[in-house]
Length: 226
Image 1 (tube, rainbow, N blue to C red):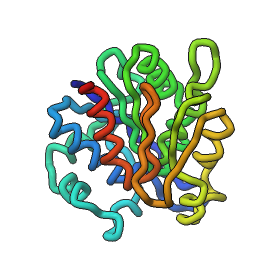
Image 2 (image 1 turned 180 degrees about the vertical axis):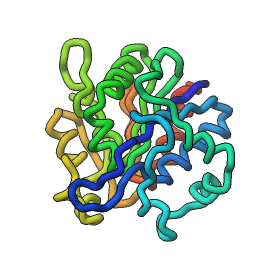
Image 3 (image 1 turned 30 degrees about the vertical axis):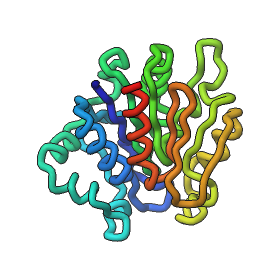
């Protein structure tokens, strides 16, 4: 199986002067789930090269066994330092696509035409797409061939309004993931803040927050093996 993991290239947290990027746990946990399943992993980002890491995700309270393993893994670190440009990849070359979150995707991937095309092409080819935490927000402009939103009528989850308030960024982000999915007509649901929660509806798999990263990857692996 070949899996494409998509990461953000955006590193500015709105107008705060602070840095953002991808959330390390949301890459590390799925990376090792896919690796242990024997998958061929490719990392991609809009700009290519090394994507920005949200510095907060590497603070001690947010580190996990998977993040520590990743940072000590020379092969993983090398792969992260040389992600391929998103514009250069084709859904035809992969069996599935996984989007890691962090706040960065709300600015770049949500508006990126290559990302939109990748998701639409994968789904139309009957390939599952999984997105965790803020990453479900990148579905905001994806549509079916008839122009209707991909998420309309679909059971989904994603970072909650209350979780965004909890991290103090509800007034900073360009949009709230929960509100946007609801606006698009998705059947949005959630669990308690920070609790693992995964929703699967057909080819679309979504996880609520960083704690849902491993479970989302496991659900994707199970789907591909079905």
